Length: 177
Image 1 (cartoon, helix red, strand yellow):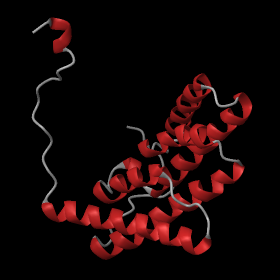
Image 2 (tube, rainbow, N blue to C red; image 1 turned 135 degrees about the vertical axis):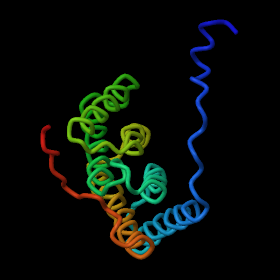
Image 3 (cartoon, one colour; image 1 turned 120 degrees about the vertical axis):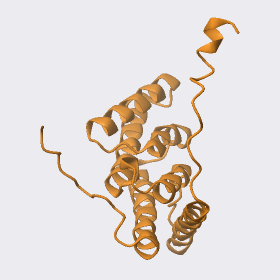
Image 4 (cartoon, rainbow, N blue to C red; image 1 turned 90 degrees about the vertical axis):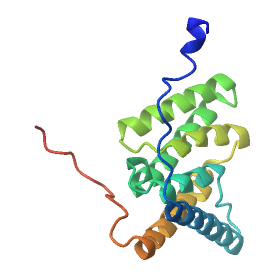
């Protein structure tokens, strides 16, 4: 093989282990319930509460609930921060592709700087630039939608895995060695 192409083939390490079937079923059920709950709430309140990025959040919340990016602070703050950055740059510069690039870069920076990284929230600036919403987008669907999926995750995990979610809300720094 051409040496430069080999760099794109990976390191040929084994695939990560598959989750046990009961975890796969539990993750699927939790994700379905969370999005259905937010959807029903949206219909009942006539508020736009669904974002495509919330579906991706459910993969993490229910499939990998112990991960740092699955914790409530990361889900809620990550979505709000990313949407806010998207809105600020959209309003400041208009719907230009270069401004979208800046918005995504700043959203990633802000999530890492605040320790609220939530990968699905990275799509929020893209959603903002594609739909060009007003400032109300921060409340609905961003904040209320994120709160909805986190609420379902809290109840669902309390029933199916008592005492194991969340690991933290606000958190604190680990002691220095």
